[in-house]
Length: 411
Image (cartoon, rainbow, N blue to C red):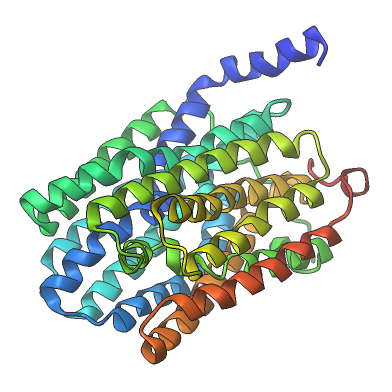
């Protein structure tokens, strides 16, 4: 990279450090953080209330609420500005977390609160915070998105042992209350870091008579690239329930205690961090379809290891690391691919709709996992099945056009 270009590349990071810090902190305490910490509460709740594992696995059905809310959150961000939408999420999310502490054993109440987390959490997701990066970064946009999307993994590396110890000492109700305070303080700090004029509502020209006011969804749905990304993500992330609310239960089935499971969660989080950074940097230098295929195929091997009779510590650690690498990469891939193949004006809308593939995959995974747990009382059949689906789905990304053929990443 020439010196002048390198200086401009790094200079853009220096000039926009507040935007980068705000988006990173917001993501660190936003919706994606919950994929790293939700399962920590699971063993304590199951023990106190006697819920069956097959019943608890149904919690993944809460992903249904994101199918309408994530695209809507993206569209609202495009229309009214990222800062306003993120602030609404920051104020609402701790309230829903606090409601968990009133749980009396009714699984329907727990289900409703979990759905509420996803509903309001969409406003603290990549569709809001990565829009800040798209607004302010051009030359270093890829690196900036990588940094921002890595923030939740850092929370996942640091937080699990502290949360586990706190719950063991003070109870899970106090754990939820502490988590609500943490999310509120961190979220407000992120909003305060956003510079004046950044993330505000864009200026919209008046529509001509007879001109449709809302063509954004039509533009996205009419794109072959969108459906390629959608199908590939759907198949390669169907194992999602295992690294959400079921992660600790899965690791316990391998013969590990809760604290050892927390350490495995750290390894998983480390994998997501490494995967996110590696994928983001690779996308700047290699064809997106190759990077996507390589990044998304890795869980096929990790899931197969977890399903195999091999259950030594290093094998399980390697398996969860491989799954974590792809989970980290998928966030970068979606943001990068949407920025590359769609206009900036529809970035939030397109990204929100692409994220629906993740949630449909999670719902499908929940159905399969719950059914197979009810029949076999073990995660092994689900692990083998999803390993095969990931292997097939990863090769769909080879259908994406080369970078030179896209040319739609900017307005």
